Length: 349
Image (cartoon, rainbow, N blue to C red; front, side):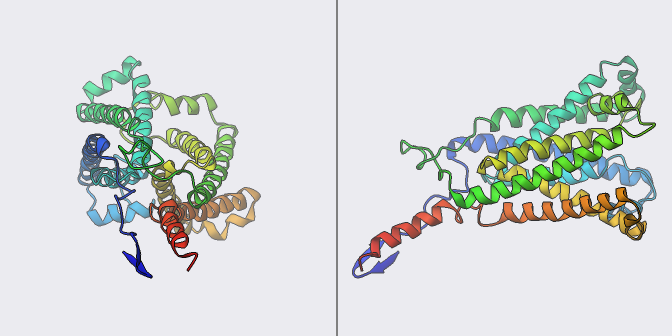
């Protein structure tokens, strides 16, 4: 409460605008539980991979950031490790009823649906189907795929309708939350541009790899959508799938953010953090292999270093922007409303 000349302006915080509307609490709860359960399954595979490889927990921790440190191959890769953490964080945010979890969960649902679709295409091949019954871990792998599909369907079905109303509090005849405001449009659009440039750069490198001499472009593209192409049962995502998936997500989220969609904040934050982790891992590998000292000897090496440096800076910037006040509930329109009310109340003083 602020007092001035015997008057009063109530600036006490109202309902937390960062919290989901009460009518969506069930959707957020179910989403959080499903993502937590799937993350637990990935953690189980990770622990089993550490034990099965004969390495220690410290070897695995070192291998998280240094690709050359792990003495044995793991069942999962850095893509799964990063998203295991992401799923856990999104689950916690969803269980806490935070609105930022919505688009992050939707992104997770789409990615899991893509993984399931790729596996479904692979199961059309009889030889690949047989591996599920012949491999000792086939049953567990199939159960994990099924859990991923179930999680994707639950998340997408429940979170798509869980939109927040604008222009007023729920139940007051308007829509909940603030309308478009320059304070969130600006960081959203900056993040979108950074995502688009990064996506186009990764697309250019992917095209170069596919069209390189000796590369079977058809097999590479099939690998992105068909799990049977490799010929063996695998839980970790392949390079083709992660590359194509990353390009698509970067471009789609980039376009949405450039259009000023502040509700993509959660998705931007999660995917930028994942890309940042993968980029840091690449930088560590370049350092330990002494590639830094040789990279500028060729044009391709120079471009590769420039792309890596840009990705590192851009994804760090998006993480900072997405967690900063420009996107926040109190740093945007709501705080501005308080300031406008105060200015109007005392402008004639």
